[in-house]
Image 1 (cartoon, each protein chain N blue to C red):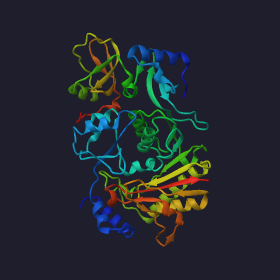
Image 2 (cartoon, chains in turn red, yellow):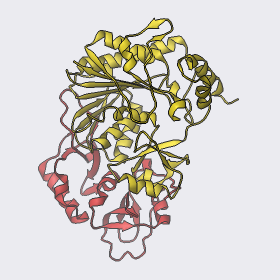
Image 3 (tube, rainbow over the protein chains, first blue to last red):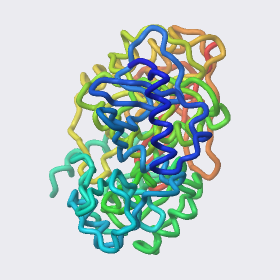
Length: 149
Length: 306
């Protein structure tokens, strides 16, 4: 893992601000790293001197042609997100956690792109709205049957 | 008779001579533990989460000795939304002890967790540090890193680097605090549902003793003067507990620290077992017996390098 180039970091800061309204001040004290498969990590750890770690901090983006936020990122920083989030009812929350795509009603105001899914101030993770359907972006390893919510 | 009854009986026979009340000890071993958890304060306030969880289980109780250790009547809290979003971590009560005995030290410091997977203590320490400072979470087995990584991600831990090394060959790394939560026979977890348990022979205890000695020795070798080392296991076996600490005290310049947790009943380390005597300083170790606090069994020692 190496520190992320300034150009790419600025692109992600801009994306966080424009897409989710995240105030850039919250990133103070964090170091941004790039890992394999275009994964971007966020950590506030020191450099290790004599050992190469398997990972540092948490994976927050995948940066291919455009940035894709991870569920870890949206769950942790959801409290700072002021736009492009969708509140799900309990039934849709259960479907989302099972990994299902969703049909959203009252969708005219939603701007296509990545969204934060929420349920009563609990930040669930990432979805992608293409104007017709909400594609579930949860990694398979997180699919889960929810019994209590 | 269930498949674990023989194992339970062997444990009762072997360790009854060490306890204050044989009957209560034997009875407690045969009662399964309730599910316990803590709130991940990196994600949400304790009160908010507990109030929400009380909608599912109105009988949730907080222990007298740790204000972030809670017990639920439910046995499937893993299927709650709070677990899914990383607001709670299901963890045995005794497993929460090591970070508590060094609460005075845990702030913006450097910590090495030598045997970190699946990350219960690492994530607990990270929350106590409010994601500041630096934790190196190491484990020797690749298969176990997946669970460690998954828990760090779910709980939103950003101050941790994960390393994959046999700790005995870990490069010398200076830190303020070392946690050696060593692999052990795990006899103390026999009350747990689905406990991985078997009956151990004398030679197995000695095999674990050798492994634990190697790990603790390595931590002592790399620890700078003034740093702290915490050694813990979840077994009753003195061969894996006091004996390991005693042998380490004889080899390195260490000062044992007396430990206690308010409202947690515990006992001192023992100084004799199987016709062997240990360094008298091991009395400063802490033993937690299942019948005293309705928990698993646990052993812990705090040492300072000088």
